[in-house]
Image: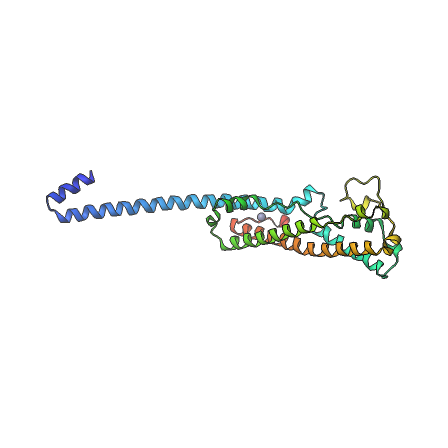
Length: 254
Ligand SMILES: [Zn+2]
């Protein structure tokens, strides 16, 4: 209809009306594009909110994962405790303190010396955002920064675990003569109930065992640093997500 009117105005050489028709068409297109853009943006914001709230759920699951799945065995604080017990044993072997001070708990911690947390999964929603090229949908620079720090920390942890697993020495598999396992041992996370008996005197005199234990303690130390970094990066992601999504839950901030 606009075209017919336009042709008519051209035939009548009514240039004022032609100009007016032109303005109406241009304005119509412009307005239409604006509305479309508004709908697109609204759709993107909606998708962004959905992604962020999924990420939030996954971060909480990831932080609580080891607590619920492995009876706390794979928590950072337990790995730190393991490092302290290994330090105790090495100090005694070094001549600081008596062998009789070493306990079944020390014995168990030697068994756990080469256990690493290899159960961490990369946040699935973040994988999805990256593979679908949708990461730009997230507007907040703080979230994007926190996610990229998490990605670096996650891959550093994964690389280190892979490297450690390749050269892993399970001490009591290599030196079975030094331990009598508690026959009731089932869940090793119940550390207080397990009563392994170690021949600490014989261990102390065995040079290669000492070397292996020292290497295990050193790996434990580096593993703890990298795991702490990865956990901190998750906590950071959690705190920026909370801020952007307006969530507060102080009692479960970890
Ligand atoms: Zn939260």
